[in-house]
Amino acid sequence: MSISVIALSGSLRKGSYTTQLLHAFAEAAPQEVKFHMVSLDELPLFNQDLESNPPQPVKEFWMAIESADAVLLASPEYNRSYSPVLKNALDWGSRPEGQNKWKGKPVALLGCSPYQLGAFGAINHLRQVVMYLDMPVLQQPEFYLNQAGDKFDEQGKLADEKTKKLVDALWTAFIAWIKVIKPGLSGA
Image 1 (cartoon, rainbow, N blue to C red):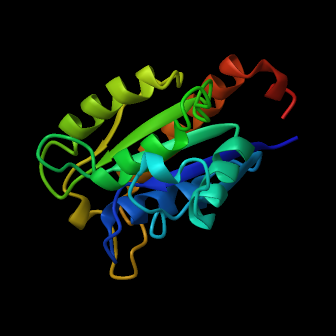
Image 2 (image 1 turned 180 degrees about the vertical axis):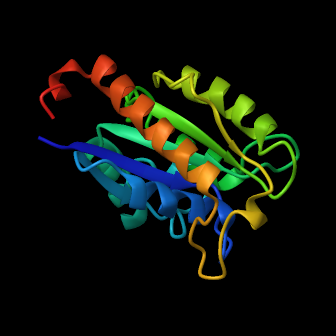
């Protein structure tokens, strides 16, 4: 049995440190994890008028959420909050009203920034939103990657050994958390 984890990057930028961080998480994923990065590039801006007949990217996004056991959310920080791309994805996943696809999905939050605070403000704000969406949030360890531009090589691979250890520690805690929230996966 495997654990299906989807990952969403809150950055659409080519060469995004946030997306590179998720690639590092993919490479370090435990063998029992089926890891899938979900692109948000084609997801339209949320529009309630589209709920009854959503475009194909929304349908595919909903299927990805529904098939996942857990979620990794990674965000840069914009104006002390998480990215609008991620907000849009969270909104689509919680709709139509009464059909919150995020409900009960264990989630881990990753902050990534080229600045000193490592997107602390973004993750603190994001934590409030996912709690409202009824997603059990891994509280410890927290993960804030600061000075991100210094942690990756020219090919976009995580090169910082200390950060690699933090990635491994987060995976260990997250898998344990997933199994607490979803005990049926304990045989994984």
